Length: 142
Image 1 (cartoon, rainbow, N blue to C red):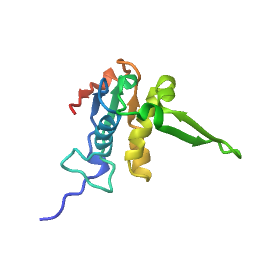
Image 2: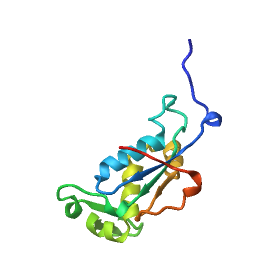
Image 3: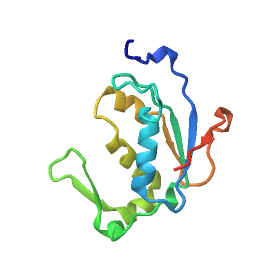
């Protein structure tokens, strides 16, 4: 008996919705990363992109536990000399809550071409409405 290897041509991708209301940032990000990567499927193959689409709604209502809202910082560099910028997660949640979840999920995906393709299948919305009703997404229980 040989080992089953999934092929990209045979994979049917589904759409899932995760409601982030009142849930911690890490738990939502882990659930999304698992589905994007395809690890929830019995035919998961590590070298094949067999993940599915994920929609995260209510990103502005995600919870960070402890003092992370003030102590945790998002740092990035502009590319110019002395261009290191820093913003607290409290300010980032007010300004762009979608980016907080996208960064958390992106950090949990592999740093290669499979991870790059997987992150494009993630859709994050600050409110409770999304534009993918035509795809008939299924609610994902965490």
